[in-house]
Image 1 (tube, rainbow, N blue to C red):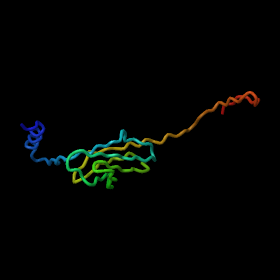
Image 2 (image 1 turned 180 degrees about the vertical axis):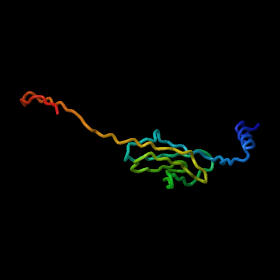
Image 3 (image 1 turned 90 degrees about the vertical axis):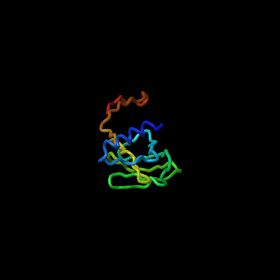
Image 4 (image 1 turned 30 degrees about the horizontal axis):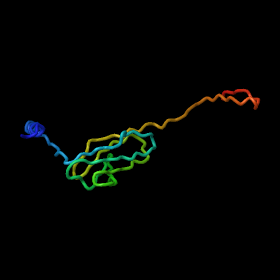
Length: 133
């Protein structure tokens, strides 16, 4: 018996015969980072894991018009260092002619201290009064 997903995918292709369908990749891109959020000016080490059959030897990250090769840790693990992030950055992975979904790194404004108050409480032996600054 055929798997139900095979039947529904084939039916979809018959009904929408004029539409181009991207071939399914024999592997999956899995981002291992718990969060894709950094403070402005910070770096982010992006960790990637591949699962599936026929894993690509090389994986690339595409950001806008730029493409960079990820560093390979082993056959299924890769990483890439985004440096000095200043704005939200959209990217996707590619390998063996297949691409991932689009991801986005959220860049948060660096917190700034604009004003603070201090109450000084001097020890009695200094004979100074408490002052607010």
